[in-house]
Image (cartoon, rainbow, N blue to C red; front, top):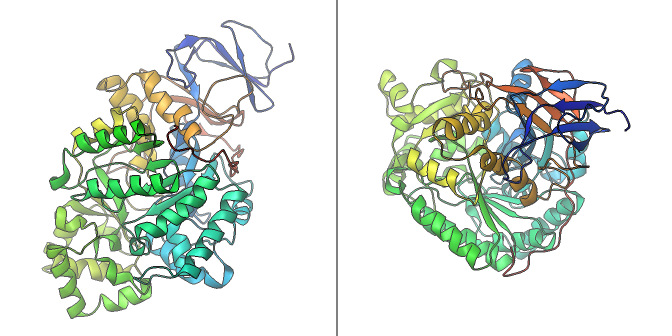
Length: 540
């Protein structure tokens, strides 16, 4: 037999299908997998002894924001390594309606505002999917597949205006989406709690989801409400996908805020009924009870109608702050009111580069220490940060997290927001946490089932051909781990601490993590996802 580039021998093989582990050797030749019987002794340039370890396909994180991680400084490099160390070989980015493409050159201002306010400078904006892919160059260690953000489309065409798109504007958005999907983007995403996506009606999203369906690609949504109105928001998502004929992916499914705790009993049952009715619907989840987003998303959507600079100017006015206080108590129709459903004591500053002493503390405590109202403190902090503040929201119940994670409809995500300060530990810990805590320690899932949720299931959902399985000829994205030691190291106080028990990670057949140390290999690239057959009603 022709010499292999690499041979992993002596390990238990979990192939990603959900089948039990079996003994076997896994070879790599020219970046592709060669499956062999145990003890094959096939000649290889490099041999990894995996005795007592498990060999799995590379993990696929279905919800990240790492496409917006621009810049080459040391902090950003540390952030880029966090998912890789836990075995994530492919990330699905462009989620929550925000992507850095496709942006007409004469309209990049509003989109840069949108990205900067959520993810911070420096920001990058690209006219097309191809330009975005080219810009990644040879710098990546793992792969990206990219969704097209509805918020980006709307910011580029309509701006932040609180009104329906005109027929001409909607046509332009559909055209930009169609071109990006044809070029290899993986689907359409929405973030319907965020401006400017919050300004879109259901019909607008249906029209765009029809474009995704024509390419056989999914509609991926951060629901319009994940708190007290989560059930009606889920109905809207099902209505959109059904009318459009698209597959539906419900992002980071949760029922947050005390009024919604326990509602996953009903939301998961509703998803099951939708599947029984023929809708191709799945969801994803991160294994924590805290979420993370931009601070300005805690404020009423009318505040950002004219963009971020105008928001900061308006928020300096006492009358505007009084209106914010009123709306946090009374609510605004169609707006997910996180603070009103929980309180400022559950909102913790994660990233505020100009105010590092605020990081790790709640808005309530920071305001009390200064003897000011929390709304005043939040507005002043946004001004000091030019709008760039990320927060953690401790708003979920552990029972709901476990219920969603255990559902056969669910795959895993991190929802990683790669920013400095004290980011959410999910960016560096989600996959290792599931394998260690929820599989080994709690017994919520068995190991084969958890690996399936991280590999073959997301590869199928997003059309990632030749990935997600250990099968002959598939791309050699691999993880070798110790099932008795694997665990998350990341905590809220030390959010980028590496995981334990991950022996090595391969991307495209090249070792990128060896014994916990990251190598210099950079085999990652942006994956162009080919069109598939459009969804057929009544078929999954």
